[in-house]
Image 1 (tube, helix red, strand yellow):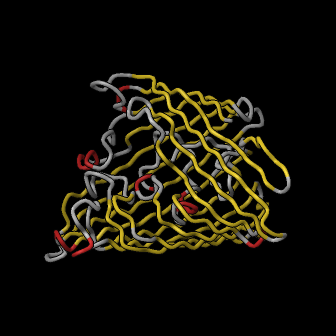
Image 2 (cartoon, one colour; image 1 turned 45 degrees about the horizontal axis):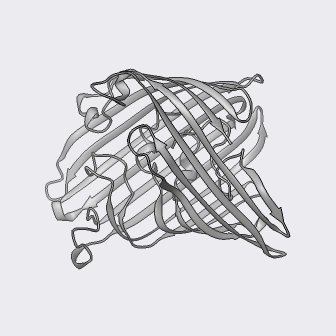
Image 3 (cartoon, one colour; image 1 turned 45 degrees about the vertical axis):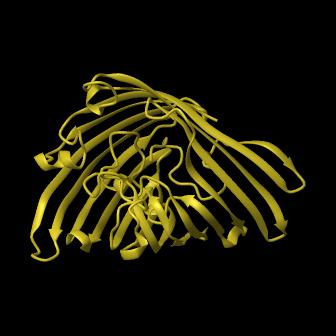
Length: 365
């Protein structure tokens, strides 16, 4: 969930504001987008060897199309891949993949693989690179297939509603604290988000959003052992407030999250809740400075006795300085500091009590 400060979230065909239109004729168009970057990480990021400093490269590529079906609707399709990511993989790996219908001012419907509705709430504080996201980055950090979603974003109102269908080995909670691998046997689910934005309040727009996601797990005869981790249900609720624009002048934002995964097979419920705060300023010369504070609380509850165990508290301070030299090229430096995480925090975030540092450069097309 790492992006530049130029965009918080995208609900149209293209995943990049810099997407290039390579074909356009008779109401049909084709776009491509992508990026390539190199980042220097200090050893605490654990990118190589025994906490050695390392330069890591990664790339991304996407292609999408839009065609006019009638005066009031267009058909859309989009797919994007991670082309490489350091030494972890050297092949194309899917990110967003969907087809849908764009009804203009009346909204957009899409089906496929993408982030669920609660991410539209989390986007308020998803403005860093690698040293943050210790709350929101755990519950919506990866895409899930099998989704159908409707989005309306007009006249200041924002609404999103989604349905989750059955999936094997699906992404759900990106944290080993819940399970050692992010592969879940999903039966069904639903999600949604609502928001409203007031334009031009002192130094920028003031936006409020809230979201909810419910996922039911495969149980009993549905689970064969190859479907993924079995569970009963996963509930995720969040709310955010954002004031200003991240790419112009002052920007402040706050996010609250609560998530719980229930598994009666081992008589356990895993709970996480916390909040993120962010404040920054974007100068006219392209330099943006953002700093924040993140607190996340974890515990496991025995469903029979009610006892809470494995308590973990993650408290971090991220600092991010970005220089958008132009719309295609930007450089940044970022640091993350421990702000009182307990010893159990390392079971959730490996570097929870360490100082992180990185310097990166990215070309976006």
